[in-house]
Length: 165
Image (cartoon, rainbow, N blue to C red; front, side):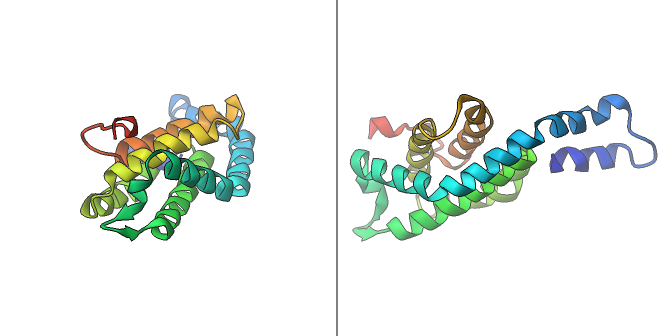
């Protein structure tokens, strides 16, 4: 939404917007109540999402929660909580491009520097499984593409899936 508004402002700098250029605002308004409801639900369930994802990682691939024999669970939870909150805002604003440009590309650099991209791939793959148990089909249509964007952007560049570990 914000990205589209910025583009609209640039495109119509010295003129009024056309009806076609304004359609995205009508679409946003039409689905705003659903997005707001989902945003609030993510807020209510964020701890459950993180804890369930964490437990599943511990069962399936516990080694990603360790870095050179050091337990990084606390840092993992902080990073995952921050990312979920950015995802919730992207859902509310219907703006995955803003999420990618203003958060994910920055965080991708950090995860790469710490060799944590595989951890991100595992985390957001498992999280997509977790949310399927907590949200309706309609809610998942809005949330899963955002989580997939996170996984694609932060995950391993080689496309390694956690099932291959």
